[in-house]
Image 1: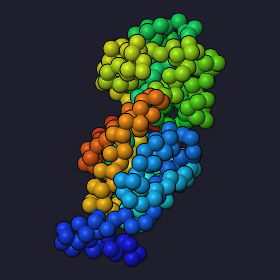
Image 2 (image 1 turned 180 degrees about the horizontal axis):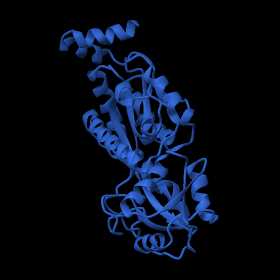
Image 3 (image 1 turned 30 degrees about the vertical axis):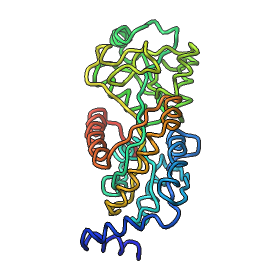
Image 4 (image 1 turned 90 degrees about the vertical axis):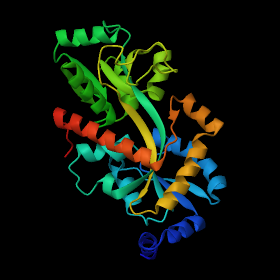
Length: 322
């Protein structure tokens, strides 16, 4: 309560008070909550970025994994922390955008719970099929699906997951009828294509790139605006004739609502410096992830557009999790 009163006083007092609060921050250890298990994409990004922060902020920094309930447990823990800049969260498209849209959990609203700090990374989805699949290009796949309505299926990392919604958007843009087969995770969903249990899957670049290079799956298209330097021979969805189809996955840092803008700006500057460090950029590129520095305002605007986009997809497709 003392910390909350201090922050509130900062907002009610003059700008000099906020400046003084930011100048003294940080005075102790800073914790970043990752609402997913260790070793996942968000955890990897967090552990690439945070080692540079102690020297930039002058205090120790730790990453704390709090997985559970599709990221909801860790997200709520971060949101309920004191808004003093000492507990922050690495979120992603699931925790910050998709989960609250596809669930009926009304006490989970990241718009009200958090203030954006910095976007940290961005990635795209790749449509893969088994090498034996008769269609070798995206237009051929769409034509095949239209000629065989309801006979093709796609895997996902789970109901309401981004990999699920990517396919639902694909269905809306192309008018094809394909059946959803949810798996327990992205790795299992990709292997479903390898084992010919399912016909297609939308997987992130870093996750499916090894399978593509090994020839175990065939990539038909990527969901980015331009071709990926990691997969230069894979056309974009637009090139394949699917208009208005861009799907990205991403990570970013948020702070509890009411965190001082001056503290947010200080953390943002440190994160952006870390993101521009050559070894961080190279490490992200190695696993197919783009380093994406941004201002808090840019990240907030980006999240607003993403929520509008996926809310429309969920409304039209009827995807919901009770």
